[in-house]
Length: 459
Ligand SMILES: Cc1ncc(COP(=O)(O)O)c(C=O)c1O
Image (cartoon, rainbow, N blue to C red; front, side, top):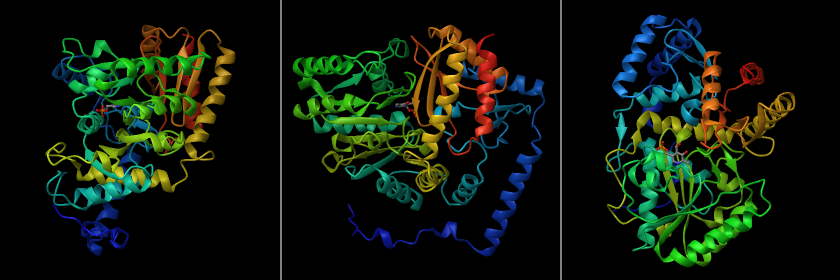
């Protein structure tokens, strides 16, 4: 093991690959201009018939139908994606919350091109280049102050698997997890066991205890007490089997359900008394609420032992306290990320933090207010069709009628045909989720999205 003295602030910012010769810089400018010109021309690579054939083949190869009949051209711009056959779609699905700077962003493409010229496509956990350490440095610099270490991984579920190992190691012999009703934590075997969707784990065995606490219900005055009572019962009965309390502070796949700080504090205090670590899954909330971390937005950093992030990071990571530092071999893996993804993920974080996205007057809070104004108007005009809405920052959801799963799916398809991609969350009820590309969407595009929503609401 090598220990380095803490002189990181004196490190030169750019690696050799990023400060190449004048020829390199000239070539890069030419390339960026050529990409912008191709975006401007917007020449579709396929005809409609060819795109259909390719999509049919794709569905056949995957062995199940596609959700949207969409194949990207790679020429998308801002909040709009462009299909391979030239169709434009306003993208408020963002690959389930990944592309916060939308499509074809010049800053991100430039970073990607520089990183792509590195000698390695992928980086692992044994030998790494500077993108690996730069990403960790950036994450730790902006993470809640209680997080001392960082470990990179590929998918959100990977980061959660690593975190599960850390809390289990800390609570040796206690394999169980306490989680919230309606939670989603990924699709690996362990995460599928915790995720509160039995239909996502058909045929899979139960291998460790999982106990659920009801999530916050804003319509129920007694919600906080009910959840606390349920947690106390679990801790009293099974606390000695539990490695951690795993929480989403805003439930993503359940339909962007949020809860106030007052809901979490008594639950976390109860866990602190029982020495059960709090593990916060920010894979979906990271960068998409009114602070970089929902943990900071709600002032809950003191309670967290480990936090996992993903999606907008273009990879994933866990951040954790020193007492959870893993033994050699407990977490690792061939890959920690692609060089391009690491460099771009880091830049996304820097842009979000540096370009006024957070805080009460930040871009994400402003988008939230704009969406709520428009949803308020729609719910007044169509009280039967659009009843409820909620959300935080770039995560906004509304319910159609009684939230039937089938009518929500049909609505999504109608919107898509009209040029708007939205997605859903939750099952009973289902919510329409708007994943806002906070980095690029304009107010005019937001109005266009709501005009389509209004048009397709009633037919
Ligand atoms: C809260 C949460 N945790 C974990 C995951 C799993 O992330 P991934 O799909 O990258 O494995 C997701 C994905 O939607 C998520 O929303």
